[in-house]
Length: 397
Image (cartoon, rainbow, N blue to C red; front, side, top):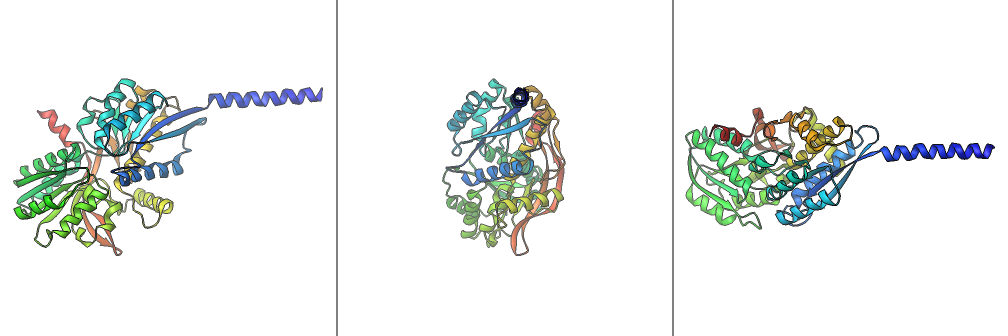
């Protein structure tokens, strides 16, 4: 009889465990990063941001809820691959969320898929503004280029009379060019010329030489960060534009934090507008940078892409907690439209309920030496929360 009682007790425990296991809710997140090909360095920033967030926050979920991250390589700016991996994640893996992407063309390629399947996608970096106009299941924790380029143009017009723009030839570059030119011309500045530089295997030298020969007061630059940023800075240095008195300014991508030490002293004095700097003294950023260095190495600096990944994961976890792990796509999007972060390394930001873009702080920054190392020093807060200017202007048309 005692044996039977123990067997019954054992079966009871197993039944409870079985019920507990079956009721556990697994939320699947499809993460699309760049692990090979062009942009692998930028992809590494996204990867590190996700891994750091999961290490520090992966257990901050309702009881019985867990997260599974399913990772895929988009191989760089390759829309066909991006579409294929997104389809695989949606159809085969049945993910509840999509996120990631360094590259805007990849984001554009999957926009129709997210709408058809009603799977929310949160951009960690891809910054082309117009992609989201007809993609109701997309949101952004990164930025748009108009948010930095337009105020950069306004600021530059107060200091310089003639400018030349040099941007990478894809959607974010075009938008950066448009935003800067509008801001600069509104302030009375003159655009002497514009060049668009190929994204794949760029040779900056002939373009920068042409700019030097034109003799503007200032170059406004944009590139997709990573090694492209160092390559553009090297051409600026090798061709002696600084010595010729031609100032280099741009969006934060041209002096991204993780690449800055490899650029050398020619980067000193480069002025940018951007929403993040690893050098910032905000308490939330000091904690983030300390955790990043502890995890990945004291000599490594987190760039804005790592922050975009961190913030995207925080936004996703917020929607999971609010739904107690039972994910509904439409409810997720409604939650994202109300999302506000007070603890981001970049400072407070929110998601615009109308456009699903971020409302970002923007800082005027200058490359200086801090404790013997190059750093983007925030010298002025231009705005504590700027909406995408492009969409604001579109409303008025």
